[in-house]
Image 1: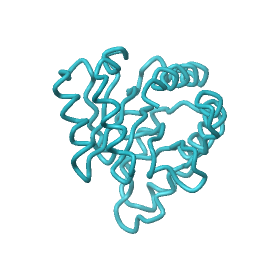
Image 2 (image 1 turned 120 degrees about the vertical axis):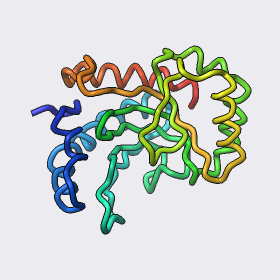
Image 3 (image 1 turned 45 degrees about the horizontal axis):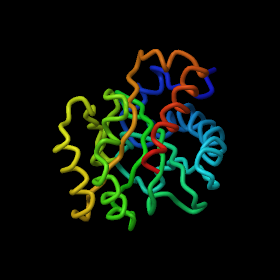
Image 4 (image 1 turned 45 degrees about the vertical axis):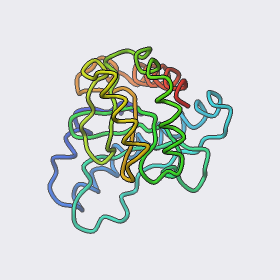
Length: 202
């Protein structure tokens, strides 16, 4: 039994039809791993950031009809939630897993974060260019930095600043079969490396 890494069985859960069957499958496997990742990385991120970090595992409690297309654990210095502030996330969709840092539309910090990042677009070029960005955490689309011009990145940050629904997250995507998902040790080591790199945006 793997403790942290996502396997084909985890990715395939998002092909299960129906809210209840998919939720049962999520609870059996990925959610256990998300709690394990939450336990590990709340401590790791507390040491990394100098602020106590709390893990928030997605419960999907409000869903009544449509099954979730993704699931995740997010980290923030607030015990009660994470959406209102910039945060780290480890998550899973049907075709990829991810580790990202950023800010979503609920956060009152959107403008400050956008202004800070707009002043230093080179931050994004200092990352490995196979890292990705997300402009909407509800959608799986995450283009790689290598596919984006500085103007594209700037436009995403301006949207974060000026548009109520604007979001911006940056980090790494993992596809089924990637070497980082071959063992728990490899996955944890790579997630730690990604989070350490993303600290420049914190």
